[in-house]
Structures are given as structure tokens and as C-alpha cells.
Length: 295
Length: 279
Ligand SMILES: Nc1ncnc2c1ncn2[C@@H]1O[C@H](COP(=O)(O)OP(=O)(O)OP(=O)(O)O)[C@@H](O)[C@H]1O
Ligand SMILES: [Mg+2]
Image (spheres, helix red, strand yellow):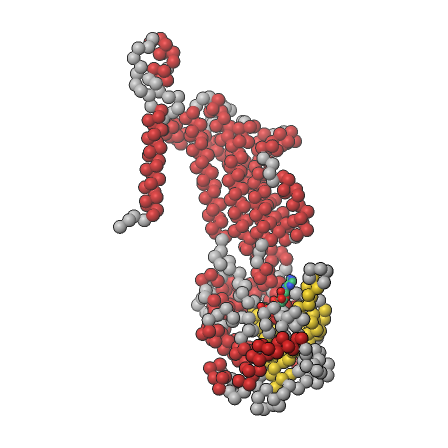
């Protein structure tokens, strides 16, 4: 069960197009995410990554198929699935504490004020913002705002954390620090994470599995790359790892050329229900091998 | 070295004021006694003819009148002779009442329109049709149905202040950022709590803009409405003093109406600042 904590089962998304026809954004996506896994999704702009994340969050519905979480089909939003929005989405009229406490009081509706503030303060401290709790979002830097977004999501102790390019608007230094903190926090709590990114290095540092999506329209999940880097990797020196460039080159090759060719002519034997799991590096066979776990 | 802009502006304002008052004083002052005139005729005609003094009061006359009103704003000498303070209180009472009723109607209905595209479309033709009607056009209908001039004025105030608030509330509610609503959705916030914790604070600056426009219109309309129905109020006071040919009192009323309108606007501006959030 735990290796199928999230089970994406054949979802498609279509929008009506002029002339009574419809555009298919993506089609027949199948994906499994185990409990405690950190999954990153990579794909070109417009292939539908945010749409998949919104469906996972319950903010959007698929045209076909369904997503099961813990064996139950997603119907609407849930406090068990917290979203870190790309544009941080803080409520500007509330303070840092107010924003986090709003989430906490939504989760624990009968909790007293003191308990709510205590929980909110703990989450704020966890992302290193203690001391800034009475500031308003307009008084914060971009990195600090994103931290508040993370604190707000973590404060409700979700089963799944959904992140849409959480660090892409930040400068390299802040991004590095936040990636490190996000990884530490998620590892400490065994958090299941589904994250979208455009940054290949970010995916290699953070993810256990990297999902590659082809270009849209008619986007597909091409393959799932398992991260061969050791679990205790450190951000500063992942590029010294012997497997680092193998993974990096594979991802970049995919983004540069295979993301189009794969969509137009998938390799023989490719099965959308079981996208191949790719294991790169010295430890495993260099070629892709199809995943053959029975459904 | 230059003085701060505010100080220079203040100085310029004072200068303009003094120039205007000076020009006014010169324009209305007479040319001195006219020499050869039949004394009986002069007696009959009064100062206007004898000294060439204009019928327009001078700034000093107006100043004296204002001082007189300020010293005793609340006197009552018969139903047609009440202090300017009492007349103002009547007008302000009507404006406040009509305006508050309008707030109570416009904000909930505006929420409904803003949140439900169906209701928005259904009510749109009515709003489009009724909004451009001059509020005074409602007066005969109000007088006929309500049969009370005071309440009719309140109704007219209600009708004229409801539209800007309604339209602004609907617009503010409809344009709350999707991402803020999504935050509430992912936190499973119920509709009532969402209305009060997300939509209201997000739309408050727009709503307050509508409220500020409305109070301005209400204060414009009350003067006209009271001139029409008579009895009490600052509008009636102006009309009454015109019938008495007391131009000093008319000018005084104009100033008072301006000052009160400015204060009302500033109160709303203050409230607007309080709910505006920087992004
Ligand atoms: N309401 C809509 N009507 C029609 N098409 C839509 C609608 N919403 C999204 N799309 C289309 O769906 C596609 C996927 O959008 P989505 O936001 O999921 O892309 P994405 O992969 O997240 O891209 P990016 O990396 O730029 O964020 C886009 O091509 C977009 O044009
Ligand atoms: Mg996106």
C-alpha cells in the first residue's frame, strides 16, 4: 500500500477548442508515489505540470481518470494535501503569524488561541523566520515570503506536500539555502512531496524520483528516473558524485530533444500504464528497463 | 535652501485666499457718498443708492454672520427661524440614515452579485436601468407613497448612495485574486468564514472607494432634496435665506456645506486608508 500512497490512474485533461473540437493537454497519465517519497516533475512549459498538481490538490478535475490517495479517490481539496503556490499566495492584510495561524486554525478548528499561536510559531521557527512573525508580507523579501508559504503548508501537518516551482523566483543563493532546508525538513518528517521544477540540478538534489513529461499538447509521462545519488548527499558537492553527470545529461537530453520525439513517436513497447523506470549510473544497468510491478 | 513643499503650498494657498478676499472686498465696496441727491430719495433708497455700495455683502459682513452663527448655532425662534447648527443636524441625520440603509443593502447584494455570475447577470439590467436616474426624479413617487417629506428625503439619499457601493462591492468581490481563494479552498474553509476572512478584507479597499463616492453624492443630493421638500435642513435654510434676500446667509451656508462635505469625505478617506493593504 505504501508504495502506492498516491496513485494517478489514467488522467487526461481536455479543454474545448474553437470549432467544437477539443485540445488534449495531457493524456492517460499513470504514476505511483510511495509514502515518504520526494518526487520532482520536469517538463517544458505548457505540458500540464501545474494542471496535474491542481488536480492532486483538488482545485481542478481531470477530464478522464482519477487520482487515489491512500486508496481513496480525490474529491475536492483536503487539509491532508497542502499546496505551496508558485506566487507564494500570502494574504497581504495578515502578518506572517496571521497567515500561518489562519492555516492552523483551519486545521484544528476547536483549538484555543494560545495553541494555534504556539503551533504557528513552531512552524515559523522551523523555516528560520522567528522574530519576523509580526511583519506583513509586503515587508518581506521574496525568499522570506516563500518561507512563510512553506511554514503555512507545514504547519497543518499534511500527508502530502504539493509544490509548484517553489524556488524559481529566488536568487541562486537564497534558492540554495531554501532547498537545503526543505530537504532537511521533509526528510526529518518523512514527508511525501510532489514538486514541479524547471531546474535540473534542483531536481537531482531534492528528488528520490524524477518524472519526465513530454511536451504538450498530448503530453505523456515518458519515464521515471530514479536518483542514484546517496541519500546523505550534500548540496555543495553533489556534482562530485560519479553519477551526477549521468543523471544530469540524461535529464537535459530529454528536455532538449527527446521530450518532442518521445511524444510524437514513443519507443516500441512503451506502456503509458507502466512508464519505464530508468536507473542510471555505475550501480545499475545503463539502459532503461520497463517497470513490471503488477497493478 | 528651499522650504518643504507642504510649507510652500500652504503659503501659496494663504496668498490666493487673501487675494480673493481682497478682490471681493474691493469689488463690493462703494465709492463714497454721492453728492447731489434729494435727501428724501436717498433716505428711501438706503445705502445702496447713497454710497454706491453693492448689494453683495463684503467678506467682513460674511465673517460677522459666520461669527454670529458660530456663537449660537442651535437657537430656535419659530419654525422658520432655527440656528444653522440645527439645520445641519437635520441634514446630517437624514444623510446618515439613508446612507446606512444603503450600506446594509448594497454590501450584501454586492457580495451576492460578485460571487454568483448568475445573479450578476440577472440583476444587471435593473442596475443599468435604475443607476442613471437622477435621485430627485424619485421624489414625487416617494412623497406620494411615503407621505412624509423627511422620510422621502432619506429615501432619496438611500437611492442615490446605493449604486456606487453596489457596483464597487460587486466588482471588488468578483476580482478577489484566485490564488487567495485557492488558499481558502485548500484549507477547507467554509463559505461564511471565507467571505469574512478572505473576500471581505480583499475587497474592502474597493468597497470603501464606493462608500466614499456615495457619501459625496449623498451630501450633494441632500441640499437639493431639502430645497424641494422644505421644512428643515441646510438645503431648506439656503432656499429660505434666498427668499429673505439674505445673501450673507446664503454665502455662509455655501461655506458650511463645503466644510461638512469635506469632513465627511475625509472620514471615509481615513477608513479607506485603514483597510488598504500594501502588496
Ligand atoms: N482554462 C483553460 N483553457 C484552455 N487551456 C488551458 C486552460 N488552462 C490551462 N490551459 C492550457 O493547459 C496547458 C497546461 O497548463 P499548465 O499551467 O498546467 O502548464 P505547466 O506545465 O504548468 O507550464 P509552466 O511550466 O509554464 O508552468 C497550457 O498549454 C495552457 O494553455
Ligand atoms: Mg506551471
